[in-house]
Image 1 (tube, rainbow, N blue to C red):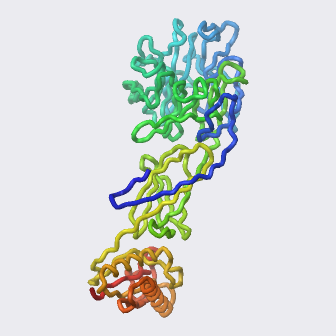
Image 2 (cartoon, rainbow, N blue to C red):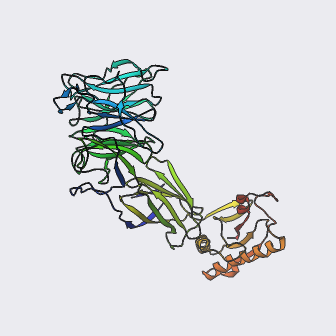
Image 3 (cartoon, rainbow, N blue to C red):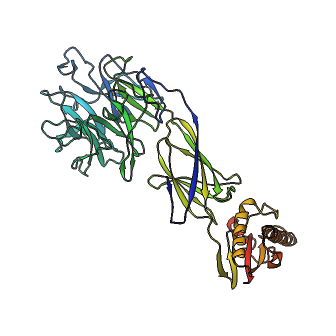
Length: 525
């Protein structure tokens, strides 16, 4: 898709792909969705039992999990699951990521009913947690509690939140890193499917605003649960039965842009299976935990450590002149994400090549800026899920030459004419600029020109004067070779005697560059 900045801009693009397929992990032969931009390694977290264990986040460097493991011989059995009612447990995490044996998280939050997922505010002084009733262990209500100052886990001010409704289950709370939004799943009236994902604003007093459904881009006619966010808050992760799945609940990711949620993408068969994958949350950018009831586990649900080896892709190409296909060095190339935020920029060298790292399935805009050429931009989608190098050449359209008065002289005003360092042969990219002069001269057959060349003040005066004379003569030679009569042209070098910026011996690189120039002065027309 080509976009233009104004009616006269032009970018033409050429595409090709260099694909390297990496090996992927699949837990069973029914997996049909490939890695899809993710390469996960899954390992048993080492805390699983023959009962159900599902991860639920972190508190003070402890991993909090939900488990139905029995503690003692008097554990009550939930008739809906045939396991003990669920409790919250915590595990110490050492510097290497190893987990300790689970122990009860809180005798205040744990009751003789089932506790499920919970989430803490960034300061870890408030917890939002879910709890079922004895009458219906499959229907959860959302509660809030505060950590008593200077206590070792004494949760006070426990309250049932006002967003709860009769015969409605609210599950899987997740507080964002800013602490101002709570995501959750619920089967509230008006849901698109069985369970939808919702978000509520967190008020300054910890109460919640009116729940907002995340909409039909994220939610489906089937169950969508277990929301969480990436470390930078730019991606929503969740489990769904309704999007394209390998089977059961699969993990999905949706980019959060300025315009809302983007179409969710299955996170691929290196983490999903034909069984259920739920409760994916990150400890670091590329390491987190996921819970699954896949074959080979110890219990109904087990917790796995999930390490993602990022699939880094390349976007490479050349900047070319549209008409001549000449390579264009000194072009600024800027890569922006779909929200217009700059990701990276580069300036092309003699080979005119640009290169950027890109992320699978992300949308970008590539913008180009070069003196003498029209600014332009092109949209780009990294549409492969595996290790890939996208090849994309960008062709630029030149600006028209301008005749204007400069310092009381009538000139053909052009971008700079480039020469190799300490040489006088016109560089290939500057023949495009000289072609503009030829066009003006052919349109005005009576026009005569003085081509004046200037250098910076580096080096000896006599050397610079001689070099400037040769550069001016070289430009004249090109014009004559391309059909302009030598009688209409004259050349002169001024060396360093007429600097555009009189910076003497304290010149910046930009000032030196400005003083190295060729001027096209109109003598008669």
